[in-house]
Length: 378
Image (cartoon, rainbow, N blue to C red; front, top):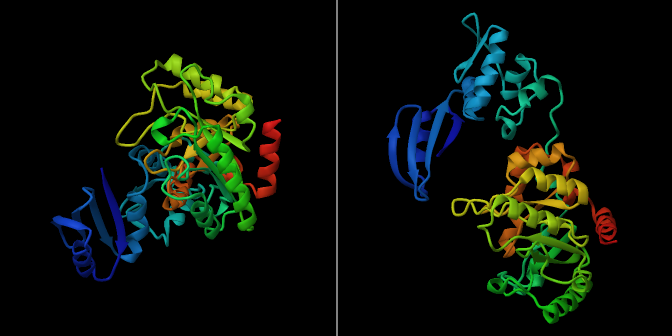
């Protein structure tokens, strides 16, 4: 896997020399008058393609989107007698001028397709029928859930996490440390839950520009029950139910386990639904369609875990959830102050999954979130 960068420049050799000399570059692999390939110190290979300003839209479009998308769009172009490539749109050997990417789409009589959607999964047909969604943006996120502190395995105190969220302009933050079964993560027993809630009450007096919700990330036990009894679960404003153990179950067993947990009336969110850790651990076997049906039936919100190590729910499943009318929440799963900004990555996956702000719970303002959580607790 590599990264392709596209640029327009009047002096490509100067730009290529600058690019190859960046401090992030481990070594130069190849160089020509309009292209360079380097290996970064991170191990990633990056190609820089340089072109003229008038050819930039075509080259940018060429390097954006999947192979299947480009094959499908080229087929549509052929219906108009147009050939599309990185060098331009050609009709009878004459180039059709395009000022930007949007002109490429309008020439083919379809709406502009956002880069994240270019996968040939129905976006071309939707663009032709003016049915593409207005994708969520990071500015639409009004608050966050799934935030850890030093009460469990977080690296920052409650006050530090709240202060960071307030500085970021968020209206609310949902604290959700690990439950008692998570011994490895210093999970909370009842006495420490009560202590944390006392501190949250004090912080509510101190931080007036942001509301702090009391939550928990409760382990889903192997039989599908939750880590606390109903009396303790009733202490929280919200409950995230997550699997943290016994990943080796069969798909049938794991699906039954998760669906049973989602049926618990105290559960608000299903956390990192497939349990994957990118480049480290695949998700456990799970009947995702059954889970989506359970969310549809119970009203449980599916988490789009925004941690760059997870990005779970996968974007393909986000689209399935949207089509079923199931709402998601872009949650950072922050274990330190820097993790709060991981919402950025989650929004990117939400966009790739066709999600609009209306599909995402935490685009709601505080008053509507309060009402939702109160209704869910009844």
